[in-house]
Length: 89
Image 1 (cartoon, rainbow, N blue to C red):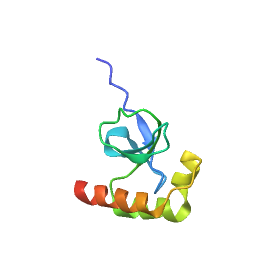
Image 2: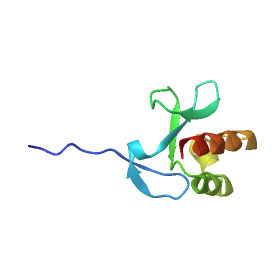
Image 3: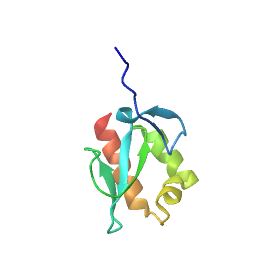
C-alpha cells in the first residue's frame, strides 16, 4: 500500500515547513480584504502561519505578510489575527 503524500507549507512567521493542516491560512480576497480562512477554501491569495502568537508577532515585525500579499497591512488586521490565534489555543 502506498503512503499518501502530506502537503507541506512554510509558516510566514517562523519559516518552518509544516504539514498544511497544522497551519492557519490567511487569505487576501480579490476585493483586498485580509482575513483568516478556517475552511481553507476561500478564494484569493493565501499565506500560512502557525497558530501561535509568537509567529504572528514575528510576521508583523519582519513584514512578511506584506511581502506575501504585495500590499500594506494595517495593525488592526494583526490584532484580529492574534485574537483568532488566542481562540484556537
